Image 1 (cartoon, rainbow, N blue to C red):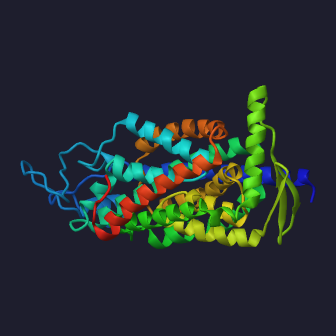
Image 2 (image 1 turned 135 degrees about the vertical axis):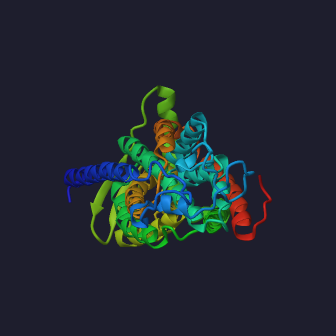
Image 3 (image 1 turned 60 degrees about the horizontal axis):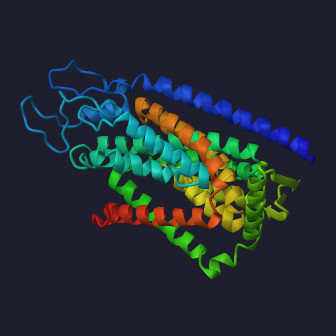
Length: 412
């Protein structure tokens, strides 16, 4: 297969994905029109058929409310309170500047290492913005509202990661740091996993369950990445190390001379059994079938956790194909984009509400962070990027595992 023909097919596929993404966004907006103004229902209100109510409106209707003049109660709604998250009366109302700044951070970290954007988006929505504690307050009084808010957090995280993935993967592709056949193989497997899990779990996961498993997965990731820094872990990454050293040497030389870094991935051969490519003079290969299977497993986990999956894709790529972080970031981003389009569409089809006012501001921050990330990553060493990754993973993992699964708070 000639490289030129291969690139033509790749461009066609990416264009089709972009069109699908725009269609999904328009579909989401149309669905939001029916859920934009949820209201609490009193006993004297005109009866409304449940079939005409959105999932959020049904949950609100089933939630106990306080009477006028009555003191606030945990797990109860105050119909007279100002609307906050999702338009729910009394829900957290986040300052837009805080949402913007956090989104810039999420976009930067995802586009820099190709992972952890969904994890950081989750931390923001659950802890920084207080949506997690708010959902937990309805654990016993209104389990339905607890689960609706939890699902909204999951899909909101993915909206941010999907946007970051779209911009950062394009930037990395322009810099020649995306192994497109590898990303498409991952994406092919992720489509099924990103559809299956939201279909099975939407409206069925409480916030406590979600946060506990979220922390457990991230904790496992941190431990695994720490192992990779040991002599035993490093011994399995000879090719990645050689490519990383070659890229860092070339980048440093170009920086001193004022030239741009012109490396790029070169595809040597493509078949259903094996794909061969070269980066910075180092040869790599992978089995597309095995990669697609890995994409399915990772996308299934990511969809359950409401994240992008980059935090699993990057270790998978650096371990199975021995990619250096410079290639793993961009390749992971393109694979995440494919999974996010599928997962978000599935959640929205299931009636999961999204606070588009909040997401709109966050998307602007994501775009800025995603633009800056690829331009700054070449100034950070592969070793330091992984160390940052490990510290964040261990902190987040320990915090949410202990709180969600054991009800113990040991970290702020």
